[in-house]
Figure: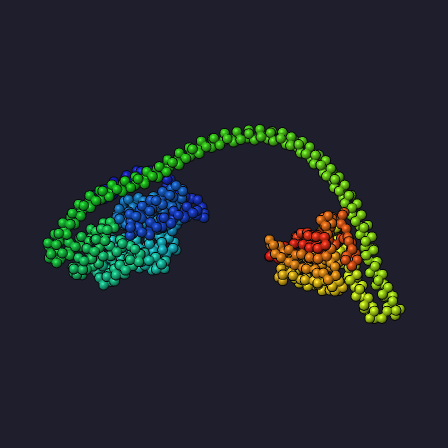
Length: 638
């Protein structure tokens, strides 16, 4: 009955038309895409569990098959069919398994020789289980030819051929091929095939009545079945134990292993092993003269056969439904592809129409662009002419401003030269007179020394005047650069006190350095020294004898505010407003008749601003003046 349903199913399957082409791929081997790698991974997952969880393995393979069909991945399609064939073989549905293996061989690309070799090997095994030994040997010979020097493929083919020889009673040839296959499997590190071959050798030795070796190989097969997760091998090994112990008249063990093997075979659907276990139980109970138990198992066997017939009928129906379900999915995918192809054709036609319209639009746009271009060129020329006219007007204004500025600078120059000539003549004349009198021995050393103390402040004032003149001239030429360094205002105040020691002593003026040590700025050292020299010099000049000059520093909004305060003559608001303007600046004589050019304060303002600060003054007539200037703290440059 089972064979009838199997043949019926095979005929139904063979008349069905799968959606995909049976022509193997001839595309050259290329790097796999991420999607193809995913399909391979799914197939491999199904292959690893087909002996332990066959139904789950079939579901996984069908999923991979559908994905491969969608991706047009020929190797994935062939591998999916192949794994489904493995599953049906493991469950003893040999005609169905044979059909799926033939589909796999038709789909697998020709360059996948290793996989094709395994497909021919399992097809040979299916023919063996169908007892078509001539076809089995043909498939296995084909597998050997493809295997060439691949030890793993060759081991599989030789192992299955040994089974053919075992079942046809050619035990020596069976033993020879099994041993060869075992050696090749060890070379290839194929633990799964090794486990199967240990079971194969056990059966051959049992048939030759070498029970000791048969048990030894069964022990090894049972142990390795756990490592390879091969429940089918485990079930058939238990049944093999039962056969061995029956033949050696150890009926209790035969009954024990027959029950154990039959139970495991039933859990995974290995029908051949179930039948063999019942037959062994019946024979063993009969040998023990336990006819009652033998009759019980005979009834169970008969009932199993009846149930098996019904089960096969249901199972074959399920197989037919599963086949048509899979085929329907593949056909739906093919229909979807045809629909997609039709849509693509429509899109292609629409695309041609769009291209034609686009070209027409491009021509119109080109005409518009040319028109706009000439209009823009005309507008651009007009704009350029306007800009050139505006530039000429601006240039004229600049020239006029420069001319006025040059005239102003010329007047300032004339004034400066007159002042400098007057201010430098006196100290030079004094020095010349002292030198002449000293050369004629008119003055003694002590008298020269005394006179030099009086002349020294005048010379230093002249030196400061020259220094200011040079710095101012440099600032007027613009492009002046600064060399920034960290400056401690307190230390600079100490230096100023030393510089003006004689001037301070001469007028008995007290210099108070109240700058906070550590209040540092980042600025050009030469510039700040010029500023301080001028401010301290002015403070001394305009302070009465016995007065005071105070240098202070404070931090405010990330800036250091530096001030030079005196209690001298002071100035009115009108006078302070003229100090920093080149056209209106003026100079007054000090409290002891000291003279100056008036250029020093303008120079101070320019140098402070060049270093990122600002300078201002607070003054009250008769009470003195305070000059302030700010500089950035060094932390702003950190």
